[in-house]
Length: 149
Image (cartoon, rainbow, N blue to C red):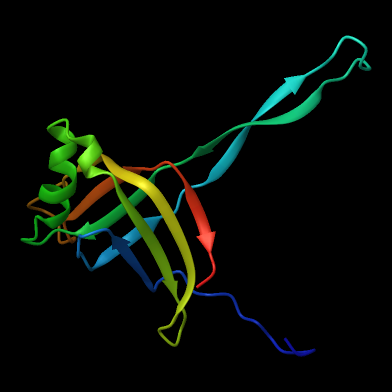
């Protein structure tokens, strides 16, 4: 990057979701989870009276997808229902979340390994409301990477 050239951050409103074998568009919100390590305190007998901080297990939060309900049952029937029926092994899929730049090109990408839906939340309905009915899917996974696009 040349001196003085400005590199603006990406906006969070243009994104795509890829899920192995499932085509679903129109997500209104996607929550990309955090990644953290447990901290393990360790001290040997001849150490000074303080503990060392060692990295422990890596933990990942869940991905959350939200979308306006339509007549499509793609995500529920092909992904959540097999988990409810105890077929978790066949429901595990790789997925990615792609952030798009203002010009419509992929700008950032997060990939998730062995993902499976752990929770489905149907929309709340109200005869007094005027809001879009939103479905939610919470997805557990076994690894997350931010990769170059």
